[in-house]
Amino acid sequence: MKIVRLLLLLTVTAPIGAYANDFPTTDRVEYVLDCMKNHAIKHEYLYKCSCAIDNIAKELNYDEYVEMSTALRGQSTTGERGAVFRDPDTVKTMAKKYKAVQAGANKACYVP
Image (cartoon, rainbow, N blue to C red; front, top):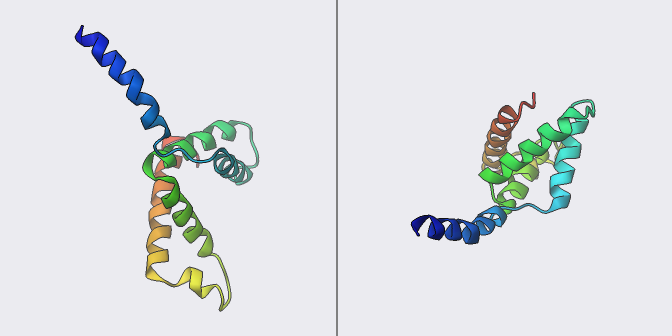
């Protein structure tokens, strides 16, 4: 009887956990396409890059992902106007954390 209760509990709660940090499909696709572009668009990276964004989604909720990935992209903005996106310590901290999360995901999924 205990096993039946446990299985019932897992069946009911598993979908809740699966959608807790779910990212929109378009953002997942955009990440995978960008990742593949950075690796000569080889078919094997479809799986590796998909694995990476899945691992990132386990570490960050969607709002954190958007903020941190935007902060990282902002680091490459040049010129005086780009200072708003480059120089604040909070932006640098978010970019650094995102790089670490992404590096861990890439390592786990064999993305060089």
